[in-house]
Amino acid sequence: MGWIKDTLKKAFLKKGMVYADTLSGNVPVFSQFGQNIYASDVVQQAVTCIVTEMSKLQPTHIKKNGDDLIPVIGQDSLQGILNNPNPLMTKTDFLEKVTWQLMLNHNAFIVPVFKQWKESKKIKRKYMALYPIQPLQVDFIEDARGTLFVKFLFANNFETTLPYADVIHIRKNFAVSEYMGGNESGQPDNAALLQTLQLNSDLLKGISMAMKTSFNINGILQVGSIIVEDDVKKEIREFEKKLQESKSGILPMDMKSTYTKLPRDIKLVDSETLKFIDEKILRFFGISLPILTGDYTKEQYEAFYQKAIEPLVNKYTEAFTKTLFLPEEKEFGNEVIFFPKDLIFMSVDQTLEMVRLLGDSGSLFENEKRKFFGLRPLKELEGVRVQSLNYANVNIAGQYQMKKGGEKVS
Image (cartoon, rainbow, N blue to C red; front, side, top):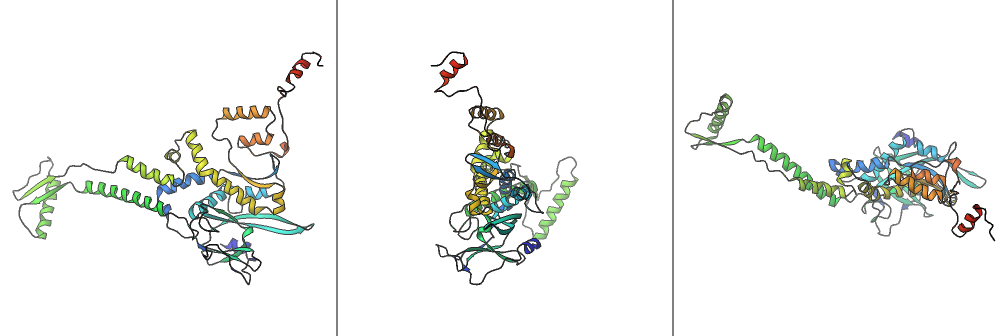
């Protein structure tokens, strides 16, 4: 955690601060602990599906001009930090880390490191890095003016307090708490899922025990008289010796003992029950078995994207835009948009046909067309919109045709 001490060493808890008010009356102190549902292989695989998709996103600084999306690029631009968030992580690493934190704690915190100054009476910022952090405890406090701050406590007992407006905070299941995602304590509410995971664990343990028992117990040796424990052990040793020495497969026995072979009829949990349990766990994360195995159809992937991925994409877009831009910058249309491959559920032929129809009529900007194929907008295509000359307005189509035919139009 040395880097955070260096970059945030000027942050401190100001005098006169108190815990922030809550309508519920609870003290806004949140501990990032919880029962580890990620010990389950099914849960790990499900979350990995989501994390993998989120790591493919392309965060892009754009400026909206009506419906046109203009990429903002250049030396020392925010886009450079979005492409290389910090010296420790690539863009993919960064998105993967943030998403794991969000899925693990239902809260993800990112600290932007920036320089700020005044220029022509306007506040300017230059971003240096973006760091996802893993606090053990989060406190929400406010000063006498009502400004909200957030205090982080880390595993090495380092503490820092930052203005909440300068921290990117992404929340999952933001319902009960006024500040944090998850339950009223700012933790994931996994009670229902834990019950299913326990049932799944019990079933697997039962299967394992049944298999071990079936292979370890082959039969019962019944001794014809009541004997003491030492004699029982002696009888068993003699019986095992006879088993080992019997090359013909015929076991010689005396009149005192009888051997009953146990049939190997292993009764395990049926596959449909196990499938039901797996699907019940996966539904908690909005994932189906075909998505988990990678054997999915276009329709199945579309359902997965819309249920599990698209809501997170929207959260990331809004959280980054809210924090990284000053109010006047947002008024001028600055945003950070996390671009997936739009129209990912359409085939290439279907996408081409759609772009051709709308593009020929001049309904699409050139950068919009690029976006449909998962390509970033280009600066040189800013504001460019073309249309085919093979079409005419329906109100003047007749006049246009007569003019093309050389007829005089009155």
